[in-house]
Length: 81
Image (cartoon, rainbow, N blue to C red; front, side, top):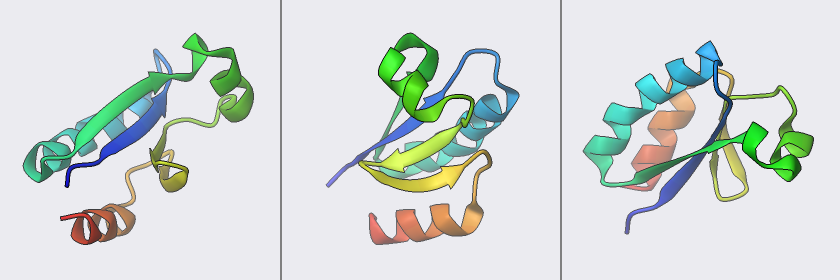
């Protein structure tokens, strides 16, 4: 069953761009989906996360913060294969 991961980002964020580049091949190879949400486009998200991006979530479970965590990503993709 495919899942959708949520990546909280903001425009002009180099760390966010790096996270997207790291995730795209993993997502493409897995059949899962990536939803990118700009925290600045939603007041509730901006209040919740502030400048603390990028953040990768599976539902309410955080997978990575600021940088692609290869161990956490490997574990998530192994469990959700």
